Image (tube, rainbow, N blue to C red; front, side):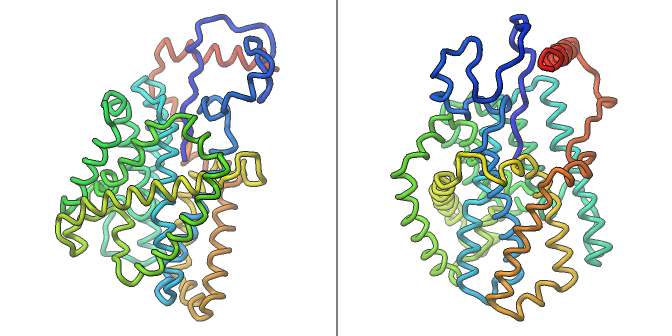
Length: 394
């Protein structure tokens, strides 16, 4: 959901007095014919790659559709199975991409500032906004505002802040993914982790983020192979069949990764087993999802830059419809009502990712807050070099 921070100012060579090469063109130090052989995903944060924007847009559509299915799925076993399959991989896919674009994160002051303004401040603002919305629109007055108890969608910002802040530590670990899996398994047997910063999700989704930190461009390139796309078809078909079979037999709380096994009425040893099983299923379905995401620019590619807006804002639409009884109306029409809810949810989140919406809500999503921070000499030098680069490119 979040792109890695750009790294201007790290190149100590003087800027060339020529216009920088356009995207896809060979640079002055790049031999002709070698530019296309280099996968564009190797430079996160320096140029936008259509594949990752496509992944983020399609994943946020699945998130919104999944939230819209929750109030209407109880009357349809097929829809319950689809819901479970989607919840197996849509957030893991988002989190893996977030981890991949956090590979360059360190404790440099400018990056810490971006972490605060791009994650922590939106969390505080939307936690407050959702609390007011719940109280005055939903008329839920028995739950006071609690900054340290994320509600509905804000858990992801809280978790992302913790994960990204600790990402330099995971780079020092020899076997980061197995260690993160061990932490997640401990989180699945620690009763009460769903309270207080939604620690259950922070711990149980942690392996997905650490996996993203460990991935390299060639891993995404491998998914472009034709046999991978062909093999993903029976895998997804089998997942849908298992989802249909397990829908009435399995507690949906397992897919949320927020509760310990004891809180779901299961023995403690089921937590680690389900953690490993869900991680394996998530990884497999996410690979299938990545394999079928287009690599070229599509009509929705530009919307991938606004997925944070779509993610945080669509919750007001879903909850507003729920409070107004809109989903009760959809349930009366069965399959047609569910189909209408699906289309409307996808359309709504698409609109919320557009540039006009970004301009309106940028003050909350991407506040600048220069007045709140002191600028060190290195950052000022990078800003000057950036301005000089922009002048040269004009």
